[in-house]
Image (tube, rainbow, N blue to C red; front, top):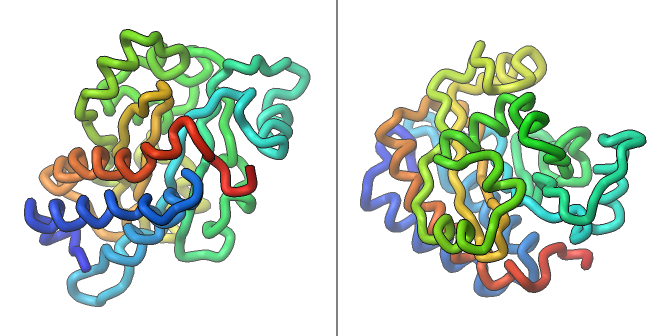
Length: 243
């Protein structure tokens, strides 16, 4: 078990080693993502009560629209309305989710986040949490929407910063304040991730009922590399479990 209030370099190293191994027996990227979010959800506990620290853990990855499953393409098209979707349009896709409520434990139950079309830089900037996450990672929105081969090579070797909201309540970068943040008691939000060789971005977002300090948040930078290693075998292979 790990405790956010006592998360150390030693604990980070142990957690990273465990995350890296979670892809070994997985049959798809979705399967590996499922193992990763459940591990984080189950292993981080409040030091005093033993309750889970995270109310919700989600793993997202960008995909080209043309590489999505039929049901996800239909979901994206419903969000776009009459606007046509190009095969190369990036979509921020929910690979796996787990949380305190049953409806948070399957990506198929998500009403608005199964796959979010990233139509343009302007459109992304209008989604506060996504744009803030990209910028805090140290990326430009353009590099996520249309990465070039040289840029992919550069970004793949980089250790990204974390997306960190120490006080979630009332923060404009955390949506659903009255429906989610306040009633669930979300204290902090933390995101970490990186760029895969395919040029797609992966990100894990943790919605925590325990406060997360900046010092603790910075330790999660290294966990991004361990998570990437678990997903890497499927980056150009089998992505979706149903595929």
